[in-house]
Image (cartoon, rainbow over all chains, first blue to last red; front, side, top):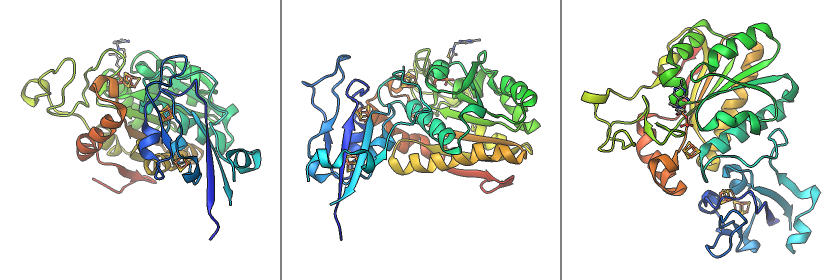
Length: 75
Length: 259
Ligand SMILES: Cc1ncc(C[n+]2csc(CCOP(=O)(O)OP(=O)(O)O)c2C)c(N)n1
Ligand code: SF4
Ligand code: SF4
Ligand code: SF4
């Protein structure tokens, strides 16, 4: 079966670091770190394990702030 | 395959709806208000009714919802959103009219307006965000506050002898002949968000039928008021709010499906 590859683009300034996307990602792709913040001081998320993203959109669907745009393609 | 090969317009599967304005939401990190806003606006985008929709904002944290939702909107005095929506809908029966209200607005100061709009069977959609507390004003007890739940005015927990019992206004309005669709949803997990979206879609679509009012409760977190992180607040909500406010449809197509 063809493998799905996904990618998430983070609107860094919109992110509030609530971590709901992180805990709702089935692939453990997303993370944030206290030392890496946006101009409002929020620790924004990034793809820590980009190779594992399937583009399932769970993170974007659960994000209250509309931060995430998701792309998906068959490898 | 590298990320740049995936991030291409033809591979896009999810983006923020254009029916939301570009403004950054005023809500606390992780607050369900943001997700609920997005679902309402995604619904409006998918139904293609942006220019035919009129919203009524209420008083509470979502007082500025008209800044975020890119449709015609007005703001009602505290609790009066369904009365204002009644007037708008009756003057513009071809428009899709909705209110967006918190539990303090809808089930405390606005109880009379809520009950009577539901009883009259106004052909409007009510989006009701129940976080069990007055979020905006600092986490005071609301009629919806659970027994034992701590709030800034019930520091030792709500106690029924002194403070009365929490009100299930959604079950209450489902008993009224004027309501056509009544449901309780949540937006804290991807699966629940998808279900809530379907319910909101139905609640707007129903306006075409002119058979009565559609009422969508969304049990949501007020993580700031509850003094928890967003992730812990959602867990607390599952463990404490859902047993008292069970998720699911209560009335569908005018028929009670759950007592
Ligand atoms: C007539 C009037 N009484 C009281 C208030 C104070 N007040 C503002 S918001 C609010 C309650 C909001 O709670 P809720 O509707 O649950 O919304 P949330 O902030 O939790 O989203 C109250 C009592 C007011 N603005 N106007
Ligand atoms: S859910 Fe949204 S706002 Fe919260 S951390 Fe993730 S991207 Fe940021
Ligand atoms: S799209 Fe799915 S797999 Fe990829 S980061 Fe989001 S939740 Fe994780
Ligand atoms: S105070 Fe509560 S309801 Fe208001 S924005 Fe913050 S978390 Fe949301």
